[in-house]
Image (tube, rainbow, N blue to C red; front, side, top):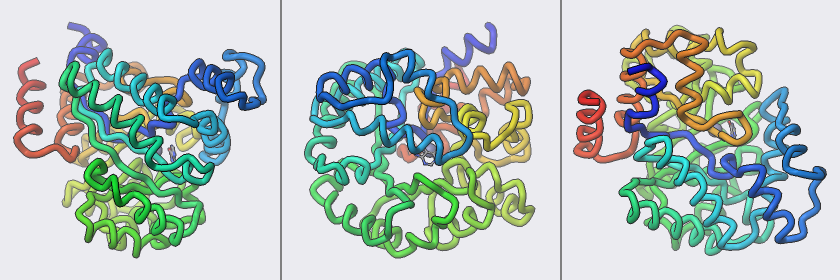
Length: 332
Ligand code: HPA
Ligand SMILES: [Zn+2]
């Protein structure tokens, strides 16, 4: 079997996916018409052509503008449903999905609207094909810690629907230490913790995410390689990194995909995983990210199997479920 076929066939978990970053240009266009939101584009093609980025911020500006078409419960249902159907096609059997509540509450779209849309789609996918989904509520780091604390309080009626807390948006100038207290509160409430660190920001931000926020997992983290002591710690503690190759290319975190360090980190014994981040903006869903590693970095079958196995090991699934999928991968 070719590696491309094996990528398709293996059951996979995705651990770093922003649901707002899975908004397809066509749905964006349709929802803009539905709600009479004026877009700076004349058609779907022009939306696609606007997805050229030079930095994280240049992407975030377009990403937040796109999210502005999400207004009612059915919009959030359709957004989630489209991604989950894609998971089914790609054999992603488990996904830990981030959402940015502040992107919506700031526009007066309340928790009840987006949470019920998400939930309706998730229940359907669980029922129809047994997919498992966990939600990660992410704070926008360009906003204040007080705003994050308010958001944590607003989410109270939905705590049983949320598994983990995350931190995303503009990294530079917004270090993890800014959110130390709200992460401590979230931890006391029993949430798992993740944070974007070391994507555009320096390795110092990864230290802070580990030592001050006590995260269970680092999103991106590719810049850990710049600090030997950090690299050793991440390896020793097996702190998972949710790496997103196409995202790193599109946001110029790496100049060339041939220079990506993901396989070097894997071969050095780190618990690295492959993810799509914001697939409609970065040119590919999960399988495409694996395919790029084969085409550009020469990923072999052993490395592929390790990466896919890691996606379950690094997940927040219970040990029994992890062992189940690890066995399935070995047998496939
Ligand atoms: O890759 C990302 N980094 C930071 N914030 C984000 N919000 C969506 N995607 C990203
Ligand atoms: Zn991300």
